[in-house]
Image 1 (cartoon, helix red, strand yellow):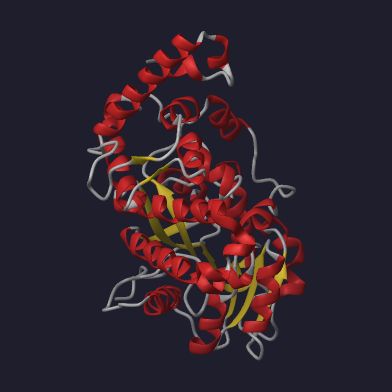
Image 2: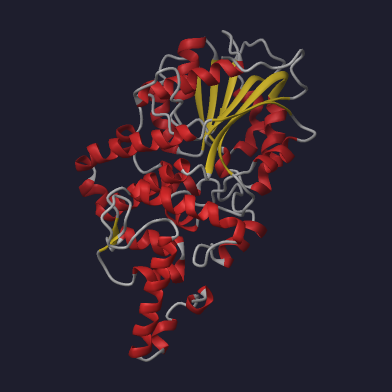
Length: 413
């Protein structure tokens, strides 16, 4: 059955009931064939198999793609015992099928692709929307989900890390060592969140930090958590950094009126491809000529526009995952790429820990947030875990320098 037969909302109501039932049966058959390609059975007994609990799931997926799949889950119309494994199977199968073209029903809507391609969905005016929709859900909720330092980025499960706290500290130490931090340095954190990196770097490496974020709740709690440390928080868009640079810099410092190091952990996913060059220009303007920029971002394997429509609607509005090629082009004539490190598989384990923390703490939030939010958040965390497990999306750390490190850069062991 062709997807465009179901693209118009309400089209089924124009047909007689008998025709409607036939279309429903056809949709169900198509849906089961699609899942079978991923070794997923409807009504099967394996943990990743789908159990139907309500009507019209197949038709909603056929009509709306990933939005229909996600919303029908939020509505309680289907479940899988291991939702992470459901998505691991589904995404892995889609990766295998891409060489033959996208499978029917898995393409994002045309309007979603056109918006992402032709419009700048990450303007200054829209920059604060993601804070309203996502980051300002409540500091208590994120404190329950995250590690003790409240790092909302991928942990580094190396060197024997066995807990979320240990993996996040390992990641923060890795970033500090890659940047070669020394006492007294001035460090800018673009997209600082609740200040996990700045707090760690100030405590362990004696640096002075300035962080910017678009979330007022992050600023408020971050300032509280970093009391007594040489750490400052500012509510602002990254594009305003050059104009406000003189008032942001800690003093005194060893630099030339710019920051010795710049770091951005998990913010670049909100920049958008139309603004990658502008982001790099800003970083170059505020970074000392002998400085380093560390960019930590989720990325995709192949070029596309925007992000998954369900994620865009419910989790990260206006987000976009970059590719190696697009970041590389943005670096041209601006930065030397000193190092590129991929540890995307570690995000799977990080997300599973976040999910376990949310489930354990959920009774505290059930009345405030409601069961539909609960199902939405579970779907978000576990679908992303499955996608990282399938290696469909990655986690990169780029180390960049304005002119190249004399004698070459060496990634710390």
